Every structure is written in structure tokens, then in C-alpha cells.
Length: 129
Image (cartoon, rainbow, N blue to C red):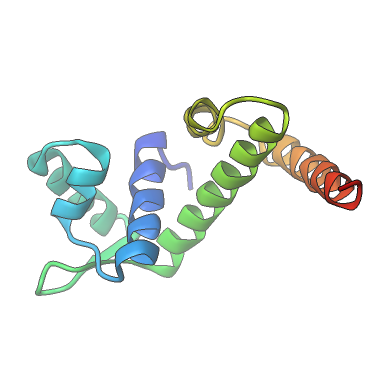
């Protein structure tokens, strides 16, 4: 199923917040992304209706298996792309911002090749230190 970039961003943000805070509520997502609470509510409703998140009675938001799979894929891309760009000499803030743009559009095949190259490059640099 095709999922839009904005939905990927929400799922990734939920994963990051879950790892950081334990529980995730709409207000946490709104604060993290600097979006309005109504915008977050609409997005969470769509994600819930499409089976990517569950909203508990207390307002805690959790990822379903399908949501977690997408969130982990996007977050892995973000981390590896950021690391790769930093190792090429890009400052961390710019690398992270660029990784956010690239992570949604890069093909699976290109990302896998870049990931292999980045890991080899990283391991080589560690061995040379």
C-alpha cells in the first residue's frame, strides 16, 4: 500500500517519541512537529482508520505492526542517511534536514546500495583510527 510522506513523518515521530518518552499523546506530536492540535487530530484519525495506529481511552497512541514497520523503515533511512552525510563532511543539522527530505523519495534498491556503502565506509574509518 502506498503511504504519503506526511503519514510516514507522523509514524516516524510517534516511534521516536515512544522511544524517548514511553507514552505518546497527540499533544506530544504537535509539540515535536510544531503543528496545531487539530492538524494532529486529523492525521491520527486517518492513521487509525488505515490501521497504522491505535488510540487508547487515555489518549495514548501506539503503532500497530503495520505502522511500526513503516516507522522503523523511515527511521532507519533517516539515521543512515544522516550519518552518511555527516561522514562526508556535512554539518549535523544540515545532514539531518537533508536526510528528512531524501528518506521518503529514495528507492529501496538505491537505499540498500547506499546503506551497504555507508556501513563499509564507516567500518573502514573505524579500522583506520
